[in-house]
Structures are given as structure tokens and as C-alpha cells.
Length: 498
Ligand SMILES: Cc1cc2nc3c(=O)[nH]c(=O)nc-3n(C[C@H](O)[C@H](O)[C@H](O)COP(=O)(O)OP(=O)(O)OC[C@H]3O[C@@H](n4cnc5c(N)ncnc54)[C@H](O)[C@@H]3O)c2cc1C
Image (cartoon, rainbow, N blue to C red; front, top):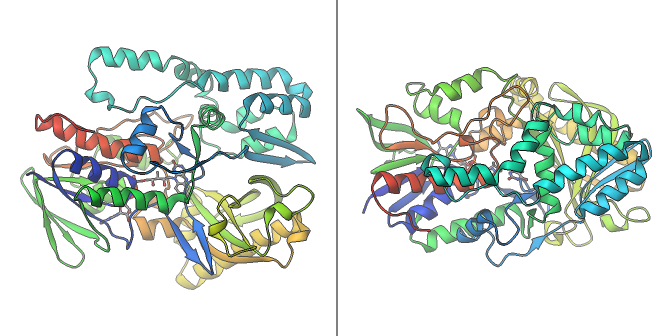
């Protein structure tokens, strides 16, 4: 039986491991951290469980290829899916604009709010509607498709191609600037990093309004644990607390990997399901660099990477009891600017977890604020010594609390800082390059890349995980792990089983 050694027990590595076992390989996953999941995680603080990942999960709607794969790996089988009525509410100058799950309601409410924008709102909603039937073909990577399958794929992507053509070269602030309504202009403009091309908003809203981008109950860590359990049930071996530090290479073959404790793990094949920069520059020491990645690593203006500061706050009370109607599940509101990293932050997004009562002590609520961070922000965090880093985290956390209390005076004195994660946190825990939580995203200037994971000069060592395909994210980690095993089966002339 051929042996596969997988580096990294995030969603990409777990997926590779599950399909390795399903296809008759003997596999082991080596994971640096004490638990599986990588960036798909959560952690406990002061009686709360802080969910560190899933805002939305593509593939929650039964019937799609992606949903079938999520179920196959045990991530969604028998799991309740939570569909919030509204994805986000934008607040500005007394106006409220909500991204409702019901697209007709969204269109009606936006037109009522901003009659002068009605024509563009209708066009916007028409374009969203045209994508609701679109599902990314994920059963096979494009490099393994035959000519007919490629034609079928291209045909299935006709509407997606149209929307990409229309908005792909427009930045998000440019799109948002077409709305006269302050809530729509300011809110939509801040919904994603400003370098993102505007097309992604249409795909995201289409997925949400089509129930295909919702939330699995139990959160991120529980999802990863279900996949790890499935892997173990299939006979896989998951070694946690095992950080790979070196590779033993002879000629074009990797013979073994060596972990930090000096243990040697051999294999016939190796899959590195972890950060691409870490693989090329640390494990492979820059000797097998790939032009496509190097170009992107060196041009952060064209290929920006996003990280974030996450501020987790406990509230002594229930969000449904605040004000007359409670606070929406996710509220984006203006604040007096706070410097975070190197940037002035002018809006906050408050998300609460009232749908997960177990995440907070009885009668309490968990609030999370995600603040995007980019190149210069990372540099600012990275330059701090340990003492100033700790006090800066406290300062940002308290500033977020003060801004929230200013907006909601009734919360005053009832908010407690639980934790602050920064780009350094993601780097330290997951070896994430510059703290990136997703791969290179589709920006206005950059070109999309789909990589097959092959590393030139090595025959039995491949890259997998979210870095193979923009923009990364959980579905890409899932499908690239599976694809790595599919490609290996073809190389070994074995049929792929799923
Ligand atoms: C705050 C936040 C919110 C997010 N929200 C969403 C969302 O709503 N929807 C969505 O789809 N995606 C979201 N993502 C992105 C998603 O979490 C990632 O795309 C996905 O988890 C990446 O999976 P991966 O397996 O490719 O990589 P990773 O999760 O990075 O896994 C790599 C694993 O390798 C391990 N590792 C690294 N180096 C070594 C080594 N030397 N030896 C052994 N192990 C090693 C790491 O510890 C890690 O466990 C979010 C991410 C973050 C941080």
C-alpha cells in the first residue's frame, strides 16, 4: 500500500487525508497545532467560545456538487444549517440598508430607502439573480477535464463570465460610488477589501440569497473536528503537535520529512497542505520557487493579501433585548476613526452569535469585530516588540469597545474584552504568510491563477490547500485537497473513488 504523508491538518489537509483513505492509501497527517482545523478554528476565553472563522460557508444548499463533497467528508452530514434573514445591515446618516436573504425583499427595501437609485438597484439585483443558479464546477480540476467536460464547464459559467466581464475591472468603492444612498455607498464600499474587484460582491450575495452560503450549526472548530473524526474512522492517523521543519530530498524525490522533535516521517508521496510561501521559502528553502507565486509575492499592490484584527467581546446581556428591536446579526456602522495597524478604521462590523447560545455563558452574548488589515498594517504589527504588541492589542480592543458603547449607550459598562487576534496571530499559529487568511484575491489589476500544485524539480511532493486557487477560503481548501488525491490516482493509473 502506497504511503502518503500530509503536512498540515487544516481543511485542505483533512480533505486530502480523507480521500487518500477512501482511495486505499495509507496516510498520516502531521499538524503543528494541538488540534486540527488550521484557520477554521475557535477557542475558549473566560467562559465564551470564540468562533474564529465561518461567516459564510459556500456549499450549504443540498443538491450541489460542493454540498455533496462537504457531506462526503463529514463536515455537513446531519448538521443543522442556520440561514440568517439578513447577511449584514449597513448604517449611515440614520439610514439602514440590509442584505436580506430574500432578494425580492432586498430589492424592495433598497428602492424604498433610495428611490433615486432605483434603476441601478434593479440592475444590481438582476445581476445577482442571474448568478443564483450558478455553482462552481468542483467535481474535477480543470487540468483533468476532457474537451467535452471543458465545453460543458464553460457553458455552465456563461452568466458568471458575463458578470465578471461587467464588474471584474471595477473596484468595490467604484461600484459603491454608483449609489446615492449613504448607507449603500458607505456600507457596500466597506464590505470587502477595497482592492477586491466588484464582481465578488455579486457572487457572495447570490450565494447568500440562494441559501448556498449559510452557517453550519456548532461553528468552525466543530466542522473541522467532524472532518478529523471522519478521517480517523477511515483509518487515517492524525499527529497533532507535530511541526515539520525539514525535508530529506535526494534527486527529484522527497524521502522523508523531519519534525521539530527530530522524528522522521517517510512516505511514497507528500502533500504540503499549508501556506504556499512557507512551503517554497522555508521548507524548500527557495530552491524550487515557482514563477507564478513569486510574481504574486513580490507585487502586493497587484496581488494584495488580506489579514485581519479580530476583537472578541463578551456582553452581559442578550442582543435581542437591546433597544426596541435588538441588534441585527451583523451590523456595519461608522465610528470616529481608530488606528489599527497602520490604517485609520472608519467603520466597524459587529457580529453577534445569538444563534449559538452555547458560545456564551447563560444570559450573555459573544460579539466579534473583524477589521481588515493589509500590507502596511502587517508591517506595523510585525515591527512591535513583545511589550508594545501586547499593549497595542489592548488599546485596539478597548477602542473598539468605546466606539461600540458610543453607538449603543445601553451597552455601557456591560462589555468585556475577551481577546484580540492580529495578523501576527495567524502567522504564529498557522505559518500564514503575512497573516493572510485567504490566498491572493481577485483584484482589479491582478490575474487569476489556478495552480495544479506540482513543484518543478520534485516528483513526489505537491502543494495543496487554499493557495492553489483564488481567492482561497474553505471550499477551495476542501476541493484542492480532494483534487490532489485525484491527480495522484491518475498518475498511478488508479480509478478515483469518492
Ligand atoms: C478570521 C477568518 C475568517 C474566515 N472566514 C471564512 C469564511 O467565512 N468562509 C470561508 O470560506 N473561509 C473563511 N476563512 C478562510 C478559511 O479559514 C481558510 O481559507 C481555510 O481554512 C484554509 O484552509 P487550508 O487547509 O488551505 O489552510 P490552513 O487552515 O492554513 O491549514 C494549514 C495547516 O497547516 C499547519 N501547518 C503549517 N505549517 C506546518 C508545519 N510546518 N508542520 C505541520 N503543520 C503545519 C497549520 O497549523 C494549519 O493547521 C476565514 C479565515 C479567517 C482567519
